[in-house]
Image 1: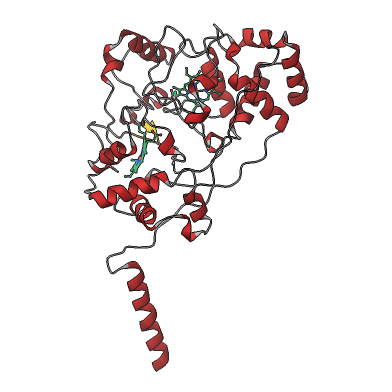
Image 2: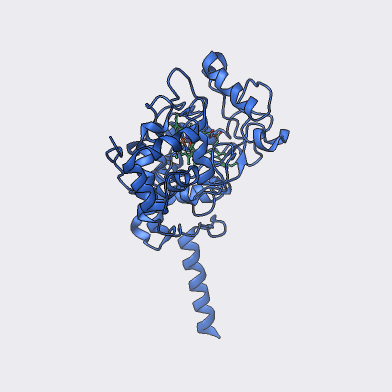
Length: 354
Ligand code: HEC
Ligand code: HEC
């Protein structure tokens, strides 16, 4: 008995030494991101051509890539997105990295597939402003496009094939080799000591970020109200107001002096001002942040959560003031920066037929 007892005592003290006497239960880390199914290369090529083609807009000036800029993590670096000429948008552009993993799209979750999502910007009056049926007619008259469609889809241009190909292209925009990803796959040295401290804050009780930024994508794909303040210009500027109230009207809602978020879809008062938790890969490259781009940097985001979020009667009960010290805030930021890896360096092809 003696030696055994001795051994278990030793084990116990090793454990205490490793985690410190105050450490709680072991961290619940997400599973690594799985590899997405390989996309058909011909569809991806067609999708890439469409993604960069300004002829997908009414006046021939706006392509998907105008707002989802490859070098800006497929976001656009602006608070509020650009819009169809002479108009103004009302929301911040999402990054498209890792969208292939999502089941719920847009800040308010109003779309449930990438194929469905892609129709939105094409016909939206304040984005690309083109009748999709007219787009099909245009593409059918361009022999080079016709060839690409036949190669990718076995037939000429249709709305469905346009949307399928755009979605296939978007599913190739993956980041899964960040230091954090490598750490999850067992490379202990992929994260610095400071990044590991940040990881503990993120997933542990100090920060509780992982309650919502959960799972391999670091998003629960659910809706939470954080009390992010409205941007004053969205309320005061007539063009921003026009866009918001037009959008609300299309959703069957009366004009409002705020962004209703998920309420526009679910119509429950409780979710007024709730937005989908964004996935966080490459987040250091997609500033500014939040549905209205109102927070300019990662350190502002961390300060925001450290205060317990903003003010709103519907604010999530999961947010509490955190009392992080400077050292902890730094570590959390270093961790967020460890979510960056490499992603396909996509360039615009020569527009087919031009
Ligand atoms: C005028 C700017 C603009 C153009 C053009 C545009 N987008 Fe977007 N995109 C946005 C904005 C802004 C959002 C967020 C809107 C919202 O949530 O209501 C968004 C959201 C998305 C999302 C959802 C991402 C997520 O995390 O849920 C996808 C996917 C997407 N766009 C793909 C496309 C594709 C494909 C095209 C071209 C057919 C396109 N976009 C054209 C500005 C634009
Ligand atoms: C209650 C759920 C919840 C918790 C807890 C939470 N987040 Fe978030 N996070 C969200 C939602 C929802 C948004 C988007 C809110 C909006 O746009 O109004 C967001 C936005 C962000 C963004 C901006 C991303 C972008 O692309 O705009 C970052 C960065 C972020 N969170 C990091 C953190 C960190 C770090 C913590 C912990 C200190 C944390 N979050 C805790 C739900 C949460």
